[in-house]
Amino acid sequence: MEQPDLKSEHLIESEVALRKLFPRQHPLAVQKCQDYLDKHAKDFIERSPFLCIGTHSDGRADVSPRGDPVGFVKVLNDKTIAIPDRPGNNRLDTLVNILSNPAVGLLFMVPGFDDTMRVNGTAKVTRDPEILELMSVKDRVPNVAIIVSVTEVFIHCAKAFRRSKLWDSDQHQDRSEMPSIAQIILEQTAGLPEDPSEMAKIDAEIEDEYKKTLY
Image (cartoon, rainbow, N blue to C red; front, side, top):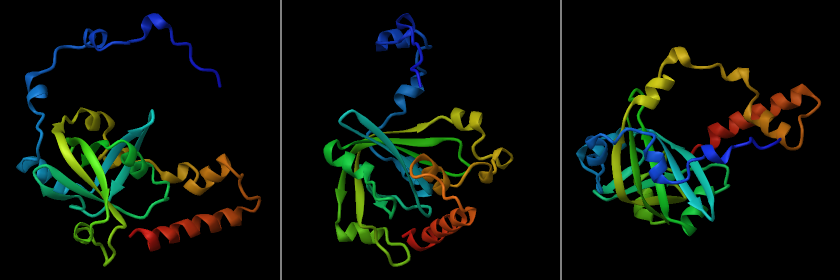
């Protein structure tokens, strides 16, 4: 696939050039940033069942979803939160990135809220049993936890969620209109099995694994 022809005269290559294209920031957009978790930030985080965590290392950026029952992220104090690491695909992209570059960015979401909460900071990976026990679900503790030291926190406006109508059930799409995750991966790699019943068996095995290995 050919790369698009991006004409150099149209590229934005400095912050000065970029800011000339946009109105000046509203004072509230500047003032809203804090370096600690106040009562509103804590309340938002404690209501959230889902976040995305962004990491980067060696020129490689990554973003990963994290989800659990409401309140799964534990606020340890005004400057520190703990995020459980649940069983996944064992790529460990997020954890490996943190080991070499601790800078992280978090986006917290609450179903039904069009606002989001952004938290930036530095992270460490811990196996402290006292912290892990705080995040036990069904008598299972996570193998490790991500501890984030907060450097910046602010609430993010609702425009993106209102444009996308993310929580509007009328906008929900039928997942069956696309192949299953197993079908997509097999088609991208080893190829689909010739027998359709074999594909159905693989899909059923993945669903069964979800039920058994969420925690």
